[in-house]
Length: 515
Ligand code: FAD
Image 1: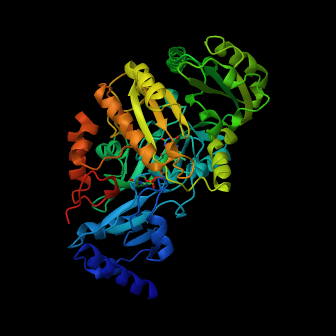
Image 2: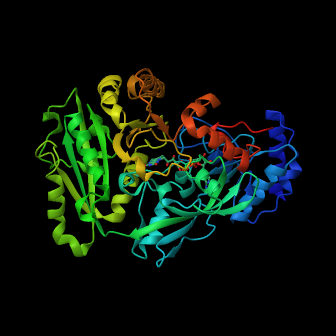
Image 3: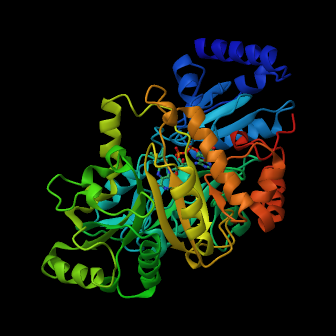
């Protein structure tokens, strides 16, 4: 009863604040098995995200107990006379308010323990709730000696959240992004229907939702492909002072995707090291003081170094052969002699590596700071121009956080999904994962880093580099149309079919709701 009163109060407050004419009884009538909350603590969590740069308080937060709860809420929004919006929130790790909404309800997908993951050993898949975190997907499948094939670098992200983008890491050259490794989805559309979709069944919805930025439905279940989990990982980093040698080797390594498992690495990434970037790099604890090479002693090309990061998975039964297999692969590369850093660890520890860095940063109060991140897909044909103009130009020997760079094969991405990538067979992810710290000098402030991101985007546009934003953020529809290019027609048609009132994921600012 108290909750209902609070809910009515919150809705009335919203009506006054934003001038909505929503009838509070519409939400009050909603019967859910879970909890529809207006507790200040719930609203507060739903009004912020990892980016720390936007804030938007919803009307209420739904902690669903089932997919039907999500369907009931969206149906109520769809059928409501005045309308309200609904935004799924995975783990809130977006950076620009993508999972927020001011004039509606946030569905808190992660943390709602709706159904535990169910593994089919025979058919090699796992069925998971859309709000499940990847770390929990991993622990549940490892009990069967199985694991998903394609990952993100960090596992405290929700399945629905990464599938709404793509989900990429160093395995993508081989297995494609996470959205290329999904057999089936349950989705609540913007009309409140709960539909199962696959390549063949409701295929427009299936393809639309994958990489669809939450625009066509809320993923309540995903069926994820599995493989036999390796026991251990040989993790290697090697250095380059020459950009073209670095990219040549990265491109060579990803061209091996069709080879037998013993003849290719399992993960290919890399990062840029500009001045003290290595020392400040929160992923760099890997470089131990016992390493034979002093970074400062190396002759960096234009003050910038490049680190190739590769892994080879193996079963304990194959431990005797791993040195030989890795040695044969490394022989083909042209890194700086003696710049090899190697470690060996359990598969799970490798996959969960960024969480360790998170704990260290949290201990220093450096995790909950603004994150003006910029992620770009850069076509292979222009990556050298990007290096000259950005890594050796705009950055000015200051990185303020990790800068990842690694190539992927476009043929591992399904063109029918909603995600957009450059129009070349190979393209690079370049990820500027920077933290803004107001007291660490001018070059680390939010303002400085935001301006620098804008300069990078302007540089690409002036130089005719047809880069595409990954985890995109735009504020005007024309910019979205440019982003989607040829895919805009199908994207907007799918919106009309599956969310005609523009209720869902308004925090992406692609379509305005019709109220
Ligand atoms: P949220 O931020 O909560 O939501 C993102 C969008 O998806 C919103 O529009 C939301 O409405 C929608 N959404 C959420 N759940 C659902 C659902 N069930 N159904 C439909 N729509 C939904 N990305 C990579 O690809 N690779 C990486 O290696 C990687 N590393 C990262 C490391 C860190 C530390 C962080 C903070 C982010 C990283 N990301 C990476 C980005 C991450 O994939 C995206 O930010 C993703 O959106 C976060 O997932 P989330 O569950 O927090 O989603």
